[in-house]
Every structure is written in structure tokens, then in C-alpha cells.
View 1 (spheres, rainbow, N blue to C red):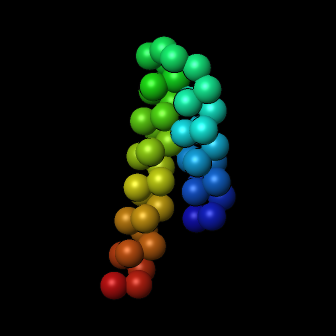
View 2: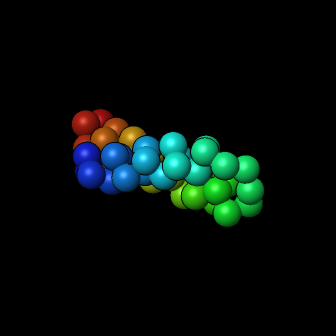
Length: 46
């Protein structure tokens, strides 16, 4: 789970460096990954 978080965070940071639809897509995928990690964490400790 920590690896997925780090990879997703890196995708958001890398996607933010330049402007364009591809980089926006990278950011969105990274955001979905971060939200998935938060969802898994909350589901486990509910």
C-alpha cells in the first residue's frame, strides 16, 4: 500500500511539471491512486 502511495504521489508531481493533456492524465491517474490508498486504509480500520 505504501508503494502505491509513493508511485501515485510521484505521478502527480511528475504530471505537474509541464502543461498538456498527457500530463493532466498522469495527474488524474495519480490522484485516483492516492484516493484508492485512502479508501483501502479507511476500509481496513473502519
